[in-house]
Image (cartoon, rainbow, N blue to C red; front, side, top):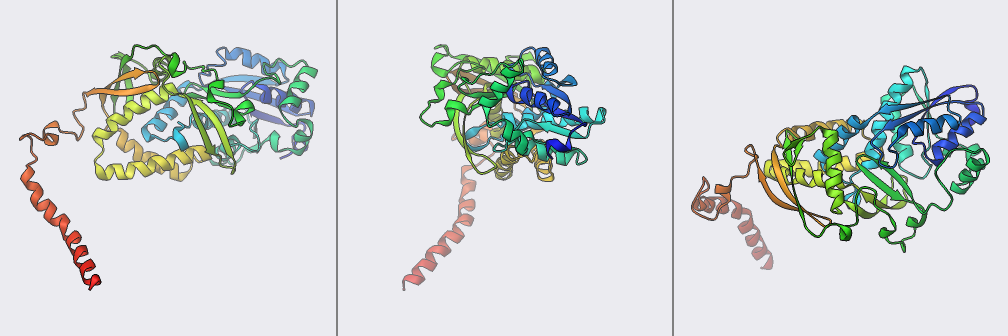
Length: 413
């Protein structure tokens, strides 16, 4: 779609209230389009008062501006990422990617309620988000058309980049917080923050250029470790330090506890974007790291060898699916159904030590349904496993090994 196709029409935008969405909204209005803006409450730490975002969008020309509740849906999606252990290259917890799907789904619901059939977003033509917004909309609401201003030649003629947008905003006195001097950009939600672009594009720039927003760098954390327990029931975190919590509260509490000790702060990754270029990012996801590691410790107790051989490729598969825009497709939904079957088994309380960027295993209680039996694992004379039983087991295993040795001997002749 092009701007000429939109004149006189109502369009619905998924906006954050940042430089791109504010400037694009004003530009659409000035070109005879009627934009209706929707911002999803994802627990953004950089926007504690979303009413200010709503007012900002109205000041930038939006016909209406609405805040949509999204913290609970995001927490549920984040939990699925943890249950899948779906970390993209280098350990990225897919925090931005999974939030795009929640945003798109909630935005589509809002558009349908208002009989708007064109969706716009501010994602650029060289990133992953354009794919996520586009494919999610195509899968959930194929009747809704997607307009991407950054792929419109007229938009590109007007704004070559960030500098032109800042100058445009100054010309029209738009209430933006951005400036040309900003040294990197940040995308934030309750699950994590991704820092990229600007000075971070240079590999000579250290990750420490970033000022953590969810906690501190590990070397700035308290010297005395902190012991914390995470209670899980049927794959869901239900308590932190024996305090019952909702899922949203569990994420926020985990962010605070882990962030204070530098856990999951400042992870540097150079990853392969779906569009074919490499991108450098510095990530913060303390709550995901803490909850994710505690879940993995329990997972080890419940999955037998063959179940683990199925889980691991599903985990890698889902990490790529989330990253590349396929959260709502058949492959993902089928894989998630299997993951849900595994997660239903996972119950227990994990005790951990938080120490300057590290999560250290301390112990597990309440995992009565797990496959781990201390007696069977013992080297002492105990449990149901008789060491002598291994004699026949090894004789069977040795058949192909002995046959292989005989084959080699014949070939040597």
